Length: 97
Image 1 (cartoon, rainbow, N blue to C red):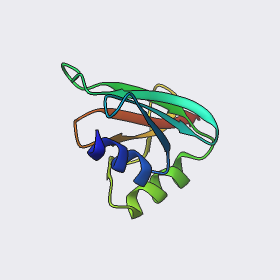
Image 2 (image 1 turned 45 degrees about the horizontal axis):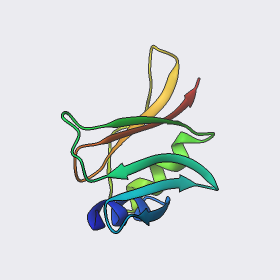
Image 3 (image 1 turned 135 degrees about the horizontal axis):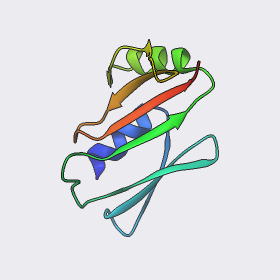
């Protein structure tokens, strides 16, 4: 849990750990985003965050040395990229084109 908390705090999220080290809630700018638990996901978990400026997010996360994919416009009408945590969970961030 400590590695996950450090990763998401480095990415700029607020993390509140509950229940010893077994559960944490992740938020950004006062809004809940997702939770963290110790049970591993079979193929890695995923979430999608709609953000106003994905380019700014991409730049900020890249400069912090985090695992971010290329940002791109996609045929499905989104400009987005993927942030992957140390456990293989993927958080996609983007906005409608």
